[in-house]
Image (cartoon, rainbow, N blue to C red; front, top):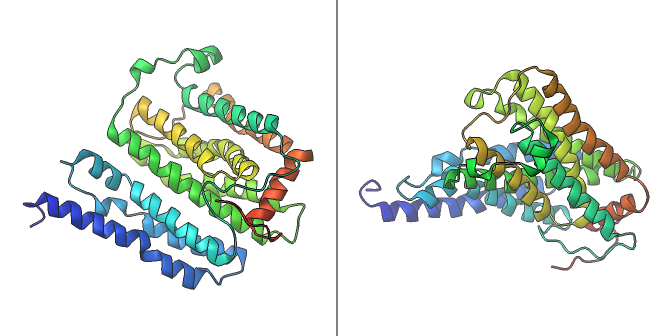
Length: 318
């Protein structure tokens, strides 16, 4: 029936996705909401997360290109996780909104926000175009946009990690902030570096993806941590989850435009330039992230952490 009546197929798949989005919400709220131990929360988030892994099993017929790509590439699965997160974090007693408007910290400085955005942009360009040409000038100013391969799958394949993986990182940040709240000197560093390390380790699953070698996967695990440092601080400094989502999307989308969504995600030839590249993409953001942990820069993140955890009784404005 579905084969001969494609319109019914679309309705059925969309209905299944609607169920899918809300299926785990009561499970998360009832069974994960009461959990207080931070380590057990990490485990439950992992087990809930893997429920979204079989996105390709609910794909609309390829004849409907946009709908097929949105379902096949896991975009709706990412929205499902984001939806679940809104309810789950609320059940924990914390504030969550992708566009959370924090009460402005007295220590907030526009120049620091600008520095964060510039650093995130430099990191984005360097990561995306260093393999295009080793010359720094070409990396930033000589990219041949004409060689980009625009397609629907390239777009939707980048939207999915932008939403899903940044939602995952947000959950990790909240769990670490709450778990180490009794140690105020350490909760921000643990949230930033703990979430970044786990984010990097999650890329171990890319081993073998369209020919990605083991050494390339290890290089990717290490390399993506640099961006994770910056994106975590971008969220903690602004409260805008959509900001790191945009940067994450752009990083994946530009990569897809160059080589296609179904190509190996990372390369490693064992040359000296590979080592230098890996050190730079991790080392420079690491130094910048350490700089952010002092003075008024740190205080803004501390104030926002209190707002996220609802520790001061002030309400966030939506």
